[in-house]
Length: 330
Image (cartoon, rainbow, N blue to C red; front, side):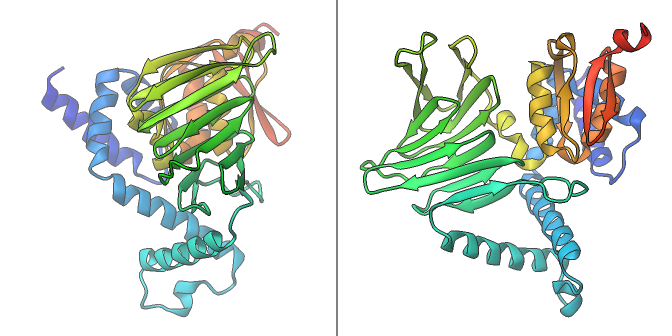
């Protein structure tokens, strides 16, 4: 395929994916098209030019929706001359100031009403460092004159650390310790794996030994690299990555290349209005390559069933993925 044709297709997908609703057939076509790494790379290149606008627009929509649901008279109704983006910016500023004044403590992003789609949230920590939290992510801070300690229970968080050589910045999750002085990095934590991606600077990563006797490492991970620690096997793998792909979740996209579906589902479930679970081990071992739009997780699930041999079965307030063979064999 020529570069011009690929660019034209990427531009077309940007426009199609920006629509409020996307047919199941289109989602299936997107999964197939974006599975080609060259297609996905061109899509990302074009999307980068709209990155700032999309981020502001997404945050504005979340803020405005939340305000509409919580107040009988929204801010822009009382001030009809304000634009929606201006109103959202004012709300975001007020929330940021209030959150900053809370100081150290517990920060979290959780879903309250099930019908409300979880959203990404950002805040400033007591030392001036910034953190962006993925949905259903909890983080607790414990800062003292000697160290800046944080505990990440699960989920994903992006940190931009304010340099302070006298006070290391330490994130702990699932027994793994990530230490930095001044850098920007991402930590993704699930029940069986911790992934640390470094965007700027260097971090040291240590983890428990498989025999439980002390720690192993530390691994020194620099910008453009990622370490994946298997909590069950006690092993780690360091590889070079494109940080922009690992951090795309902040802009509403989860991007994968030959990723086990169990890992993908653990991520996607945080953004879904209904938790998603793997009900069949064979399904979890399937691999997925492509992009998941966090605002369209239900559509992604529908498209996934046409691309992989599985079925999504609603069970109460959650969804279980099982093999298609187990359904047809009944």
